[in-house]
Image 1 (tube, rainbow, N blue to C red):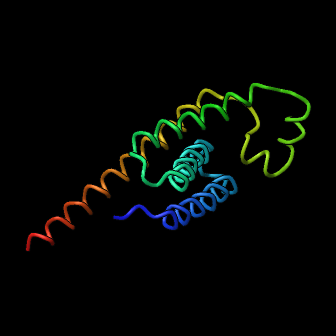
Image 2: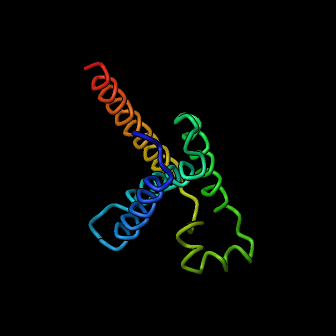
Length: 132
């Protein structure tokens, strides 16, 4: 599977849609939204760095998610006003929770392993076809 920015962009936009839907449906646990947020960040980093190793993308994605979560501990007046907007609420969040750190970690590790499995499968599939 060739790493394509367009493909990652499609995944990124799809995850945004699923994340918003997950917050609107009451029976879906809240942690699913945080899980999907981390997956979205992973694809966002992939859009900008499509050729980097997946392990590097994992580290950058985790760092971004953790920084955004810890930024929620800062309660400056200007950032509180920004968090009242739709953009601020979705991107910056409302309040720090340790459980969100776990959800981010699970989301990024999940998509990392999915990507590794897909790339491994497509690599062997392509290699097998070439030998025939």
